Length: 409
Image 1 (cartoon, one colour):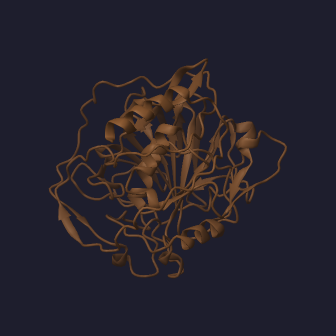
Image 2 (tube, helix red, strand yellow; image 1 turned 90 degrees about the vertical axis):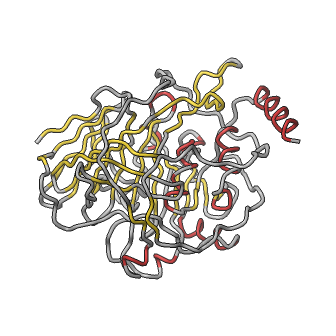
């Protein structure tokens, strides 16, 4: 049986052609994960790639966004990373924060909102003329910016403590979205995926947490722009979709991000952060009057479409992560040839991290020991690096990029 599945999977991969995004998927739900969480102490060890069951053939959805940029090179070795000696890491639950403190931001929050499942929502970031200003960025607890094929970037936002009125434009998932919902026990809202990513998602342990594009909560705006950039969602509707399949429950968080209102000692001044993503430069500038970093992209302020306000973050976090091309998944086909493989961001184990808060820079190590662990941060002495209370923006950077972050005071 397994050989037959693999055979037909190969045949389907050869026949797949380019189709538009937003395909509807409503696979049968998998058993809901257990609510049992225990406090434990573990040794930090790297974890293997995402465990998956034998994939079933998913609907052909999207192969999208032609790109003229150079694909990410396939890596054959991981450079050594200096890491601190950390004997043990205590994994705690959200209960350690109390019932009114959001574990993702450290902010006081309506306890009823914390009993809902976080939403991980896939947001487009290219091309700028069609997708900006995106809606919902400033209302997200966490934003993960990552590269896709062709060095473009895309966002996965985590919405938990509050709900924006709308989010979008929503686009297709990537391989990193097999990891992020598991890390934060979140449901994933997305417009579709390439057939390979689709199989990884629906063959994984988060399959019951997926909100396909045919479920409640999504809508088209009717704007005069390419159709694929008009797909939005209302978080309340997405939560109704979770209610319908019994998945809108309080999350089980493994690990905690620590927060302090006062900056730690030994920081270095960092009032301007320039991040080179090849296709554009992103700049974060610190404003001491508000204690926020404000984002610009391609030389202009990057605004939130819901409010018109400039995108801002209390914490800007730059983890350096091994990136490789996944030879089994093609994201773009031209003239019957694969021209862009899916980028696998190997967000497990540990690596270097830069943390910016309160106009200061802190160097440390990010750690993710297990499949369901969120990212935690430690300095060279093995002490946790606390974040400023509030939202955080993760700029996920390849370890193979040559000096991509420029910091000035």
